[in-house]
Image 1 (cartoon, rainbow, N blue to C red):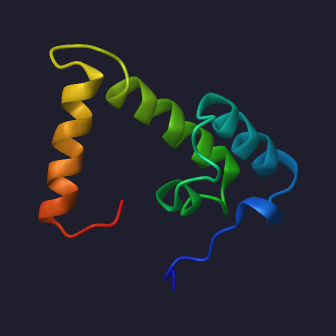
Image 2 (tube, one colour; image 1 turned 90 degrees about the vertical axis):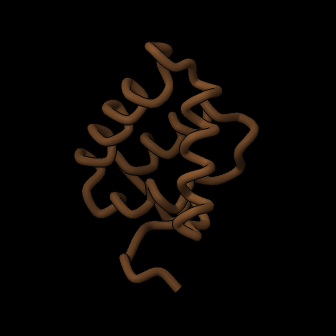
Amino acid sequence: MARIAWTEDNQADGELAEIYSAWKDENPDRDQMPEILKCFSARPDFLAQVMQASYGLHFTDGHLDRRQKEAIATYVSALNQCEY
């Protein structure tokens, strides 16, 4: 059970539904929003900012490419016993 109240995919409406839909369009291999993003669903405006900042930091190549960043994130999540 989540400690933070969030909006599930099938309950989203308005701006939040648009954000969820845009995320799904960009991630067609995923069938629902990740819970880590749903944590921000009470504030769709902030969720959009978090997603924009995150993509700029995590999903663009710089010193490390995306594959390397994903590997590091996966390793850190495993160390922290985090399901995300």
